[in-house]
Image 1 (cartoon, one colour):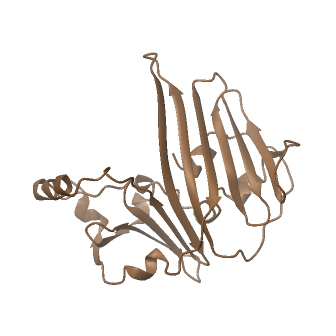
Image 2 (tube, rainbow, N blue to C red; image 1 turned 135 degrees about the horizontal axis):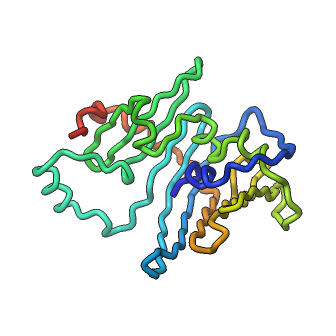
Length: 226
């Protein structure tokens, strides 16, 4: 579950005052996602995964952290023989913005060393809402401005914001200095669903992931449509 999906839980408009830096420093984050849900079948389910996010100027990189043993090379090769496929959840997302504000969205598959150009019509299918600010800040500043600031205890240079409607809630701990959410809590008011996403700063890589893919094969998204 991405930050974008968490934000969509709340549609309540609440006024607040925020400031956003014009030029942020390059940033690398580890995003830890945890979901707890109670199904109509009475089964309590938990989900846990992590993503790496790197942002620098007009480029954002998001990649799922795949634990060892989760991807079997032999099974992958056999599946390739049967049917060409694209694992959207496992592929990294590379989003770039040019000087005119136009976006270029690509999926990067490191196992098979290829890049897929994603047309605008397919953004939603790959988990991107088409909003650059959502990709860069994880939460669109315009959305956060509608949330209510609270007095909940927060670290230095950070502040809690919240929004709630009759069915759901969302709480955001915003790092005002570095411009990203340290933590997002969301869920349903009946207690059947709860999601938490925590962001921790990581060392910025000496080589960015997108700097080492220049020799990868380039494919069209339509190549993977049945």
